[in-house]
Length: 245
Image (cartoon, rainbow, N blue to C red; front, side, top):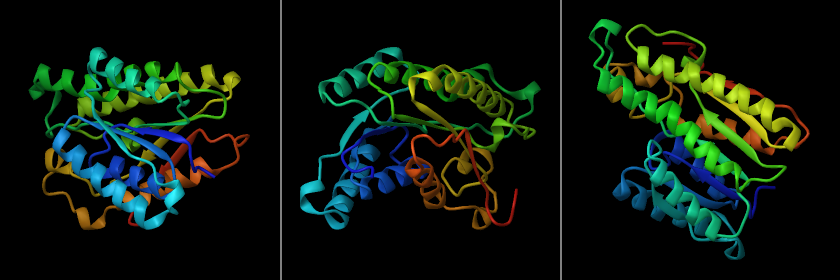
């Protein structure tokens, strides 16, 4: 059902982004993956190419385009979408996954550069990529914004992260209403604690064995993408079986 569709996943060189890219590769999507770490991105590209060759008929195998992109930079985003336009295929699926966290710090201790880096990545980057993508999307396309449950909850010591995700939910809800008449779905993905490298920064001693896997989140995204186009899906919340940590 997704075979041959063009999908772009930001922050796809590790964690949830890479898990979603793997899932879409197995469905036969034409893939564009982005990230800031070109070496990690190249490694992910090799893995995805291999996965396609193992899982799909030869006729469905297509090259995976790996392009470094700093979502905070308008110039970097513009260059990425110049490449997308060069493919001469509408963008069917956009997964805004790129995001960062910060060390657990009270507001009184939070450095301004840290605040700006998180807001620029998690909120401004979301805006820049989405705005550029809209020019190459058509009715029937889907945008998935990975927001985290921090979009609706508050975690002390994570002021910049909380603020960025709350803002991103407001942006996502606004975008959905604007695009509904155009037939483009907008889904807020809100996973609970997921075992990814972000915890190395946010909570190094977090009990990661209790967390969901990135693959669980990716399967949930796939289920949402496979729903009939006339289905209204506004929010997808997925939580570990043990509940919140």
